[in-house]
Length: 386
Image: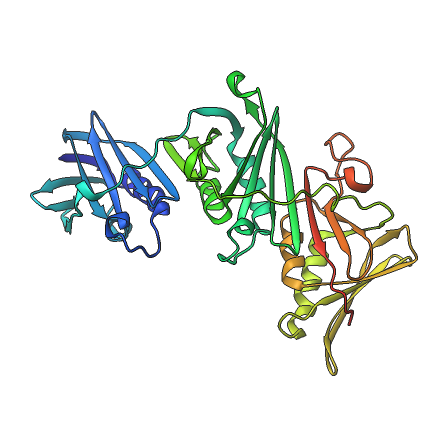
């Protein structure tokens, strides 16, 4: 096996494939990257049973072949290689990497012990890569981090006709984002609902964000099934999590709620500012009033902070609520609009955040549950106010 490749392309392919490498594994060969050289191309694959990533790049192939190389070590080597062409070869049981007089020799892993990565499912349709990356980032902040509750660590991907919906919840918040996508004819006969690991999906979406379009495939079946993503020359297959998130339609029904509007960045900055005096897990209180302001307060006793901001309130004379400041900041920063709308049921109850539309033709006009329907973020208000 012998090939020659541009350093930038080589490092990019190795870096993308290395995203599938497990942090720790009792199976040493899963820490390897599979390199396959053939017919003017190099394919680099990473696999850990939950995810498989295959990246192709152009290369001058002098001798075809396959080799399994320790992935983290190869990634470190790629980071320090000088710019220019890189020559790689398999010499007995050693893989060599040489560029501009710098030469590395790497041990290899037993190729016969490497499990076969799953092939990505056939494409079901396409979605704009940048829009998909933004949408995944907006909902992934609401996914749980507790691996003992795997159901809540996922992002639910739903495909129905020309609509894609992404949703995530950790029981204390629930984020939903809807966007358009283009189903292919053979995949338009029914809805698809798949629960994917949030961290994996977020990392994947970011890496494909500049690929133009992402092709998505779905393969139900044993072992949780697979969802495949293809963008540019990168193909990824993610294993589904078992289960399904609880429905959110009734949660997002905010009938009778008071409605407040406030500048998003100003509110986020105020939350960061007053929260510096808050103890761990202590809330930030927001008092919305009909006089056109909201007062933020955090802390206890002599260690307190407060700030007042302009805000509008309709449907009530005043509404006091309190939130975990980290959760509130996650929600606020997941939006892109200058102003945010909050539907408030009061202390200890639900609050629904969505964007205030900049123009009446952006599909998010109106008030109530329909406003800002492309992206909505539900938070639970803390029962005990400051």
